[in-house]
Amino acid sequence: MSDGPHGRGPRRGSSPADGAGGTAARTATPGSTEPRAPALAQASGRAAGTATPASTEPSAPALAQASGRAAGAEAEPGGARPTSRDVARVAGVSQATVSLVLGDKWRGRVSERTAAAVRDVARELGYRPNLAARNLRLGRTRTALLVVPALTNEFFARVYTGAARVAAEHGFGVVLYPSPDGVGPARDPFASARAALDGVIASSMAAEALTEIRGTDLPLVMLDSDPSDPGAAAHVNLDIADGMRQVTDHLLTLGHRRFVHLASAVSSWTFDVRAAALAQALGAVPDAVVTTVPAPLDVGGARQAAEAALTGPGPRPTALICDDDVLAAGACKAVRRLGLRVPEDVSVTGFDDLALATAVEPELTTVRLPAERVGERGMSALLAVLTGRPPEEGGLPVELVTRGSTARAAATPAPA
Image (cartoon, rainbow, N blue to C red; front, top):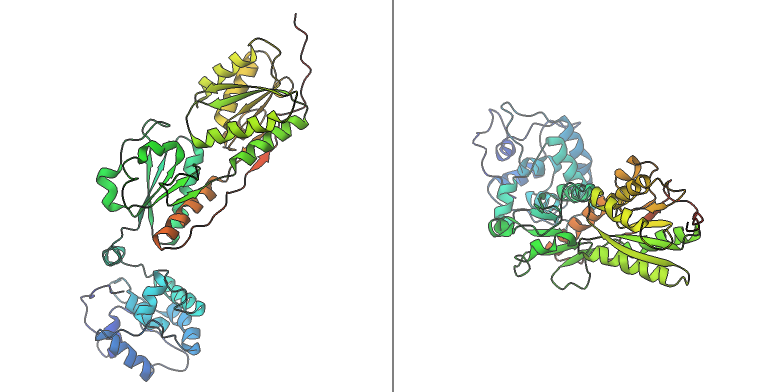
């Protein structure tokens, strides 16, 4: 890795190695105040532009002293930015080795001990790679686009948090692109941004925004989406079906047999999976009855849909199974507006385990989805694709969180 000249000459009385390092701080090694002859020769070679083989490993004493030298280093007057050459000299390795380690390409070429020493020295010197220069060499911008339905949904904000954390660990940035309409198709963000991206991570709920990118060479990682989709380089899915099975098992154990499925009106693979899993689980119970009622993904629309379901003809349902926590909050309002109680008269379940789940009273029984892990896995999958490695496979597990919104089924009053 080359960072360019410093625009500074050697200090008076400095050694050739100091001149090559430019802004490298003087360091003191116990028992010696002058660099060893081999070190001087190596530094001089680097100053002349001679690359040291990447496989060259520092000696054990050099590694042992590297961290101490970095810790004792003092910045030169003027506060010039430390370079990779400085890191190489203090760590006692070649500049090529520094490039491999800080570019996360050292495995199989540099020992773990050396990699750790280089990272320690870089951190203590305050070295930051020149990303602009690196990107020109690699032909990459080290930027990923995350496409989500809406930031108003806490779940996707947490997905972003997870993706950004993994990206930062690898010197990447994440640009967030939410659908302008919340849940509908987003306007095409790719016409102007495509050249500035290395890849895309997208939720299935915003899939229509991806029409323009599917025919390009940008790798696409889909979140919570149909694994048979051939247009994606990798998929990251939650075990949504298992989550719905956990909900139905819980309610059946409590004696419920008359259900309303308050289903999201948004067309999405993840909601289709929930409906299919619910139908399969209840279809195996001879006396179970379920009515599906679609509802918009907002509290007001969910309340209206739930009121209609609870006041329809026939025996009143004893449990409302909702596709997410927002719908469940609307369902709880509907129960109260009808003069009924949750859970004594009607049990209500959600899905996601948002902060909303513990803000309502009683608190919601719901399925916890590891949103940050989805983002982490999504970014890791994109990095794997970019480096030619196979992405991690297997769905992320979910868990039922039992709270106060569910109880044993109440006996249905006889019709008047």
